[in-house]
Image 1 (cartoon, rainbow, N blue to C red):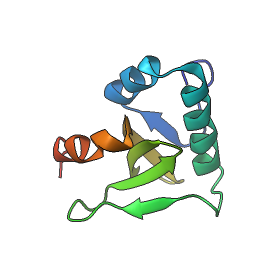
Image 2 (cartoon, one colour):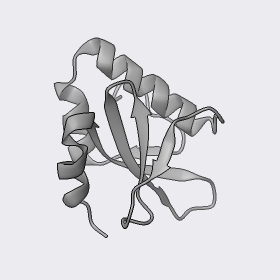
Image 3 (cartoon, rainbow, N blue to C red):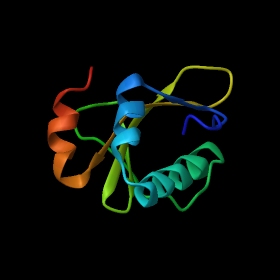
Amino acid sequence: MPDSPLRGVELSRRATRDLRKLAPPDRRRVREALEALSGNAQNLDIKAIANRSPWLRMRAGELRVIYRPEPAAEPTWLIARVVHRRELDRAIASLDP
């Protein structure tokens, strides 16, 4: 992700670290999902995280992107974490309410 910023998508330091740990094919899959998010694509697999409003999760293969909307003039998303689906519950527990 650091090679070219995506419009309306901001990565937290933790999300940047998560991305660096991924294998190139997984990193590419997440990049494509974030590009679709920034382009307001309609066919994304997005769900609200129960009891953690305003947090959302987006599916990118076996990976999950945890993010929330940021108040701004135009749609902006703060990406908090990128984790494997097995680590989702643990990552959600560490989120700020």
